[in-house]
Length: 123
Image (tube, rainbow, N blue to C red):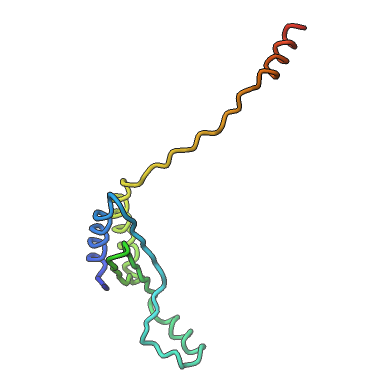
């Protein structure tokens, strides 16, 4: 479902909240190319036209069941990034902290302990 930028961010916030206890949200971003462009034209003509067009970014998010998307224009990029960062900061407090695996400590064998004790007594 294609939404405007503000509606996308509010829907993304709801998506994060519904998956806060269990679940995953995938967010992807890629350059948006209009699908109505004619691909039968020569490559040089397409490159020339694409340089003249404003760059756009397609942002998609899904939790596996619900899909949302928006198109961000180059002029709106900084405002969208700022608002997207705020949504992430609010919702990323639910991340699990992975515990480090304890490193195996080697206990010295009784023979090495006896050798070091013998060296200390000889001196």
